[in-house]
Length: 319
Ligand code: NAD
Ligand code: UDP
View 1: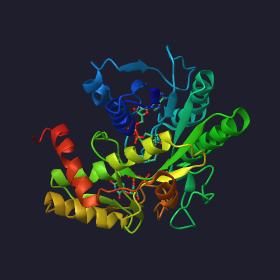
View 2 (view 1 turned 135 degrees about the vertical axis):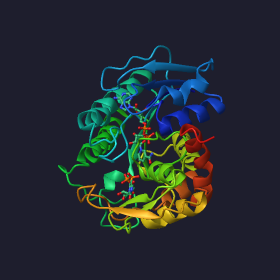
View 3 (view 1 turned 180 degrees about the vertical axis):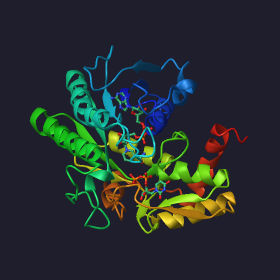
């Protein structure tokens, strides 16, 4: 297939490009570098099956040549207001990437009669009242909360994708991605794994927001990419959760990373960074992924963190 990937210079987008090229596909990567970096794609530059187009997906998209599949991953993705790349600091860009970007990429798919895959998120469940989260759960989202620029844009994106499927018969898929980590996350991204790994490598205390009892379920990037590719190749049109169902508190995550790196400096508690809308519990029910895609993650948190550390060491100039 010849596949358009938006957000190609980002963390997940760059891994997707790499994997699809490895699988023998042609890839057209698109990005405007608002949160991503050209560094993530330099190793693909000479590949004759890879074309990069610098473009903001909020504007009309033209792709020369045929397109068999469109994968829309362009969007800021970090909630951390302390990072310049956090979506609360890019609120309009985030809403435009989710709304206009989804409209424009669906337009590309219609024009080429291509299959379409939307990168949605566990954030569409908000601060969930149902646990673990199944795809049938409608969510608990504040429409004007600080996270709403991301959550509501993604909810709109899902609704628009289903409208194109139902009204135009477009061959669509929706993946609801849960917290994923690995090499190529930006150092200043602000999400918890890059923050903790860098703090631990600098032998600083890890900044736990609140009491650290909030939970997440962390998926290693290679596992996630495998699940997404299986979804792309499937005929499933309803949303599918892809993530690791092993739930951990942020405090446990901090202790694990300190132990692996051998950081003697422990933990420091930081209150109120998240203005009270930090989801308290998050864990995917992956029954649908297991049944429909025959997929489940295979990398433990311990192993995934160990595989991520060398990237940060290198980027921080520690080796
Ligand atoms: P990222 O910030 O590393 O990548 C996003 C990429 O999109 C960046 O390269 C950025 O420059 C690009 N982009 C943003 N707006 C754009 C625009 N208007 N035009 C062109 N390019 C634009 O983040 P990521 O973690 O790789 O996330 C990728 C996608 O996956 C996002 O849609 C995000 O919502 C979704 N997602 C990620 C996670 C996760 O844990 N990593 C979880 C849920 C959902
Ligand atoms: N977090 C933290 N310290 C940090 C960064 C994040 O304690 O330096 C917490 C954050 O409050 C949240 C969890 O880690 O409860 C995951 O945050 P992240 O920004 O990675 O993504 P989210 O799952 O909130 O979208």
